Amino acid sequence: MKLMPSFTSISSKLIRMNLLVSGVALLLACIAFFSYDLISFQQSLIRTLTAEARVVASNSVSALLFNDRETAQSTLAALSSSSDILNAAITTNDGKVFAEYRRAGARAMQFPGLRRDANQRNWVSGTHVLLAYRILFQGNSEGVVYISATLQEMGQRARRYVATAAGILILCLFAAMLLGAVFRRTLAEPIASLAELSRSVSRNRNYSLRARPPRNYDEVAMLIESFNEMLAQIEQRDSALQQARDELEERVQERTAALKTANHELEAFSYTVAHDLRGPLDAIGGIGYILQQKCADAIDAEGMEMLDKLRSSSAKMAGLIDDLLNLSRSSTTSLTRTPVDLSALAAVIVEELKATEPGRSMSATMAPGAVVSADAGLMRIALENLLRNAWKYTSNRTDARMEFGFRREGPKIVCFVGDNGAGFNPDFAYRLFEPFQRLHAQTEFSGTGIGLATVKRIITRHGGRVWAEGAPGRGATFYFEMDG
Image (cartoon, rainbow, N blue to C red; front, side):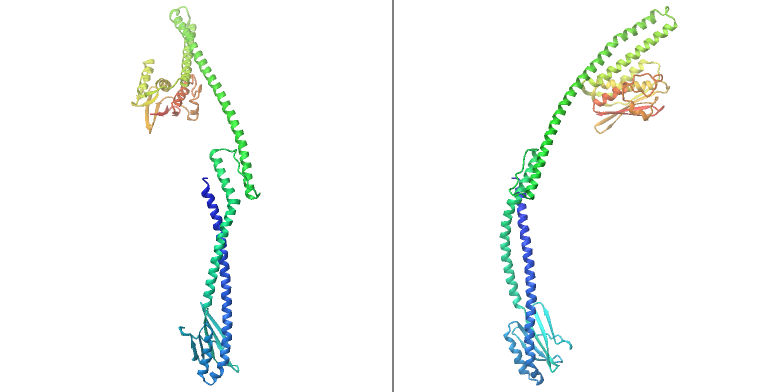
């Protein structure tokens, strides 16, 4: 199992926890017992030394009164039977040594002063104890007995404590290992199994899996039971979601197919209607032209005006049909990408526009080198619409100017067509690229409101974007961005 390292880690943590708790408890217990034993031993030793000092003091009174140093020395020598005593001495009231006993190898004794109002005092330093006991005779001080002893037995006691603690620690280790094995079966293994199952569910998205609960019903069993209930709920919701997704996908496919069919039918209808209208319109325009040319003498001025309106309306309708056909082509024509020189194409379109009105003055600037990967036919339709707009909206200016330019921005190329014509209100710029939306009255500038919508569709199909900048009376600039 891939989760075995985590499983081993849980068992190790349990064993280490047991060992740590047992070790700390044992250490604290040993420290407490050792401290208690040390204090008890010190107090017992001090009581023993006090009794011995009292005996020495009683036996040394006459020696001090009669200045019998030998008797005092023999009294102190009797302390050699005690293995804990290192030094002993009897001093006079002025602090001079009257008699002294020293065990072989022991250091010289220091005699700290005993206050006059104190008859007994002891000093403890590490493993050494020093006791001072005043010698009294008939209420008067005759001297002081000093006894120095060592706590050698404490070292032996400490070693016994350490050995005992080590033995108990080994027993605790075995007990912790046994407890770890028990915990592994009752706690770690179910948790590890649950973790492995959750990983499998998360990785494979198989919500039909279930964890096996332990025999004993406890918190772990409750956790596994809750996990299984959660899996059941997720499985139920996932099944319902999948069913809804399948139904939605089927509906989307049906609607998409129906929409494609409707679009094809609508496009075919639009193309057929527009194409079929061209014949009658051409006939109407031709008949009007023939009537104006051959029957001019038989028609009065009012009739000629009506023929002019007839031909004008026919021409506008023909333009609308052309625009509708271009709008239809911009959405239905398959893209054939080739390198297209937009600069050269714009120059050709401008020359065609100038040929329609030879007497009109127009300053046109074409920046060379704007080459893009696009469909040549659709890009001609887009440029025709942009340049025709610039030509149209500068018709009322004597200093009319139009410009085609571009700049490169990384892998993209941004082209623009600008003019100094009527411009537009930038607050309504969002309406420019919507079909049949116009920002100028028909009496000011004629048009169908389809050209810029066609431009947007063509540029969007090429994966680009189009936008415009302008101001009333200050011209307009139309930008489009494409792959260079």
